[in-house]
Amino acid sequence: MSQLNDLRSYPILLGAALTLACGPGGFASDQGGFGTTDAELGATDDSQPSPSTSNDSSPTDTDTDDTDDGDTDSSADTNTDNGADDWSDPDPDPPPDPIDPIKPECARVWTHVDPEPSHGHIGATPIGGRPDGGFISVTPVLEHPESVNVDARVRSWTANGALDWDQQISWDVHRDDPLDLVTDNAGDIFLGGRINANTFEDAMVAKLDGATGEVLWTYLQGERGSFYSVAHTGAALVAAGIVGPFPTRRLLVIAFEPDTGKILWEAAPALATTAPTVRGLAVGGGLVDVLLAHTSADQVRVDILRLVPLGTEATVLTSLGEDPSKDTAPHDLERFGPNQLAALYSLGEESWLAVVDRGSGELMQTLAIAGLGLAMNIQASELVELPAPHPGLGVAGMLWDGDFADSSTFVARLDQGLQLVCSGRVSKADVGTSWAPQVRGLTVAPNGALTTGSFAGGTRRSVFARWD
Image (tube, rainbow, N blue to C red; front, top):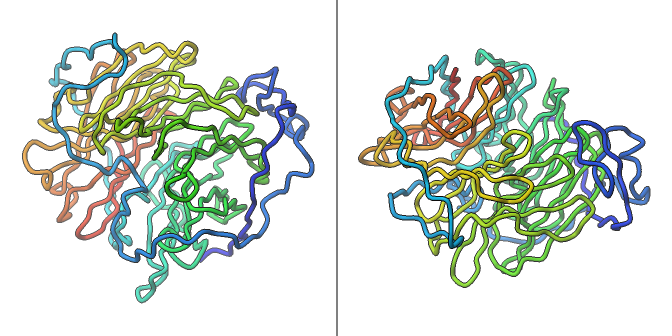
């Protein structure tokens, strides 16, 4: 159990008059971007508190089982079919013809299966890349065998799958759920998620020392919810989540000073819809883009929302579609080259990948994931941008031909035209588990190597695999 510096802070909205300059790699300059020097970042309200202790929280359900609550990871849905898509755009670009599936396999370099079980609730097993090509993983574990307190087990791994360090962290007395993570250029770790998931839930963001796993600061929102996505710009940490009591949950985006956790700005844009779900965040160039699903007129819409730092409202950059199904959900949003975004989402029971012009919102390319032709059923939930010299996208998810009980984690590399380069899979037979390993994370190393993180139920094992 780590020695926790438990810091809480409550957001204070910064005025629109607040201006921040910009340096290379941060948000754009002029009106309200992030800078890259302490002086530029210091152009905030000095009365803004840094994270401090508070005990305000809102009661929520008292579920104490070890199953997924259904609101921790929209990518957990695994039903698929090949039905037609119902686009809200009257003139959408049609999906391309199915890709020739006869392509080389992505070489699986190594596979690790945890010898001991995790706590078992899926959706709380994110992974993120280290600057040196290794990766960070987070899995839920019981504080001790007789306890009901679920801690976060944070581990740092080398590119070869060797364990560098292992840290068990408890933020509070019940279930701690980091749901997303990112590292900075120094290797420090930033987590977004929630604490006390089954009792007095509270949305959480935290920073950990990349060399030891020690908690450096923690921000608690002070109300029910989760931060589902985090991104680091070099000058700021940005977190996007859904907070507040039902039925008035709201989108919340906060930018933090990475070293201290001090709030730089925040926005809770009004939505003329209900039941928002956020999963996916892209930042840079003075812009913040969020992938969001929300309900309007009995349809679940998937949109990319655009925010500008220091602004309080959001605009719809593009609407990707709508469907009445509860399976409609956002999965991931990534920068794709300097001027595009790549969005992974589900409409109904089918997964889609879309490439959007970041300036105009124009839909440039779309791909039905089923069109990859890798199996009769295929559901994608994870997305990363691949670096040069072989730029493109990495996609991961689940596939199966007959019974889902015989499904496999899959990974696929796509080129810049969304053509399949190679694919690979790992099944329960490959790792010796009684249940199929269901993918819960994907990260990419600077050399382009991919790492998948999966969870195999039954025996409750975390599974990691490296792909060249």
